[in-house]
Image (cartoon, rainbow, N blue to C red; front, top):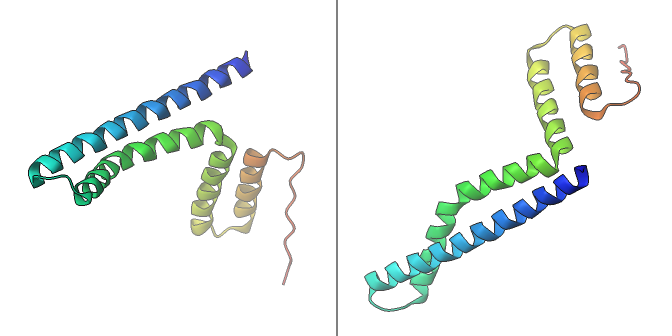
Length: 124
């Protein structure tokens, strides 16, 4: 059942990618048609400007879709990056070594799930 659900998600991502590619190509074609009508003749400048305009409009959408795919398929990496960022934020404001040690071992335990966590601190 879990494999079937994963295949369905992959299929939906592929369909979404194909749909976005079709919309992107349609936008480039429409922009090219409009720019050609404004300039008066077909030129490589119209093609370049229409492609750049479509890319500028679709870049935020592409970033959102990419973030969704990264969270869905690379979840462990995403969770580890979040945990590292949270620990870094806590470490900046923490001065107590015991609390910092607990925070570090907790972050490692949460993200990596080892059987045992130990931290060796060298005394100066």
